[in-house]
Amino acid sequence: MHRSELAIDLGAVRRNARRLLDALDGSALWAVVKADGYGHGAVDTAAAALGAGASALCVVTVAEAVELRHEFPTARILVLGPADGRDVAIARDAALELCLSTDEIPEGVRVHLKLDTGMGRYGLSELPEPPVEVVGLMTHLATADTDVEFARTQIERFRAATNSHSHLTRHVANSAAALRLPESQFDAARCGVALYGLSPFGEDAAVDGLEPALQWHSHVALVKRLEPGQSTGYGRRFVAEEPTWIGIVPVGYADGFRRDLTGTTVRVEGEARKVIGAISMDSFAVELGEEVPLGTPVTLVGRRVTLEDHAHVTGTINYELAVGITSDPRRTRRTVTDS
Image 1 (cartoon, one colour):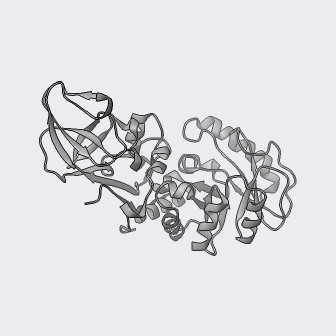
Image 2: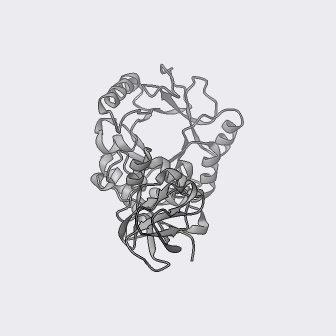
Image 3: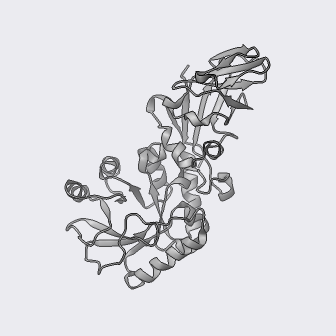
């Protein structure tokens, strides 16, 4: 029996892509598959998104893009991160498109100029007269998931700066804006987290018609009863106050189940159970209501156990948890439900 298994439903990725296309109402969907497809597998999720109607792929590095180019020889691929020197030459040879925050435009490669309208990171403060190599104009929204008024301010700044260049492809929206800010759509939207069925708002993804693609399952590898005063795990962070059945699950922070997930809830044979004590590199403990058989299924992520729920416990966002659970082929199966 494997210690744990990930299941990536590529049918869910397809349905999420179509949901985003519906929300975009005619604007193109560009699938963001950086960080190995947010931990879901870049090649497989890219194929699912393209098959559902996405018209381009977005990554952060030229190396990521080249890997995708081998699999998708004709796909439009945009590198969102900075590139210079040898990376520019590689991008040119691989027919990639680059996002630049400088008015020094390399020849022979398609370029998207980025304006800083309020993110305060990469981006030009003013738009130069775009040369022929420039095919797109873009900006990056800082608060589409938290402060829509500031997001609208950014959108209007971008609109005013680019109106005279509307013949170029303009793209602003991320997942949050694509779902709830129609004025952000322009010609295309760069959507990542929602593609995988994760809420950009930290809510139940179903609120926006999204379906999580990731499930993560393990099992109870050991059952024991702690007597009052006995503890489990490093540092004795859980000490039983009364006779307590616990289960040891063979998953830990080396697998992506983080140390700060102590206190979160998983499901043991469908029943909600609290994670107790310190999470180890390769195991953690759950409090059981009674003795259960070895091998009893444990859902870490899946039905009624969401990354959004775990994120609330850790004080982070579902994005960070997702990319920490890498879809190692040795423990991952790809499925395609009806789509």
